[in-house]
Length: 252
Image (cartoon, rainbow, N blue to C red; front, top):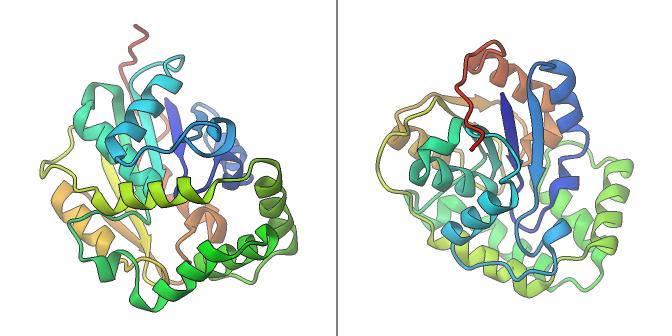
């Protein structure tokens, strides 16, 4: 089975770190791919759209070389893109995993905890990119900040900086997104953490209830679950999506 990983707000494929390689080692029969949304990574010269639907359409076009249907794994804003894709183009999706995501099914003060509004504004206003990246790590991870990870994220931002305007446009797209209320046609799993300090875990509960799918909650990780406990995520994937699962793949 081919899986596509979609990162979140102002993040690119490199921010997955070594998680794609961990997935490949843990599930050698599967294939894992990544895509950068407009305004980030290899697509950083493109202006970020102000709707999740446009971001989904871009991701679809950018990955046309990959066989369909795909498994979609989305983190935060990337989860919104994955969900929109699965609900609007179900023939393209064989499985759906949403990590630390939200939508307008939940209240604004749950989608971003009020205690984080000022810190997020400070991060957006921070001119020094190295300081900004360390602040993002401190907000989204509940683990001690690794010097190696901090240096990697700082290097990513220096090499492929995300424009502040694109961050604002992505925030606009995320704030407006409300999925159609219907159950997906493919196996679906929602994952979050009780201790997410950015987004209340109940946003994931709201999604799981609407999608009529399982919800699994980590006890102490932060918003960036792949960074804080990548092995737990792999365990959930193995439990709900056995590697020998048969999938009819389209190549047209």
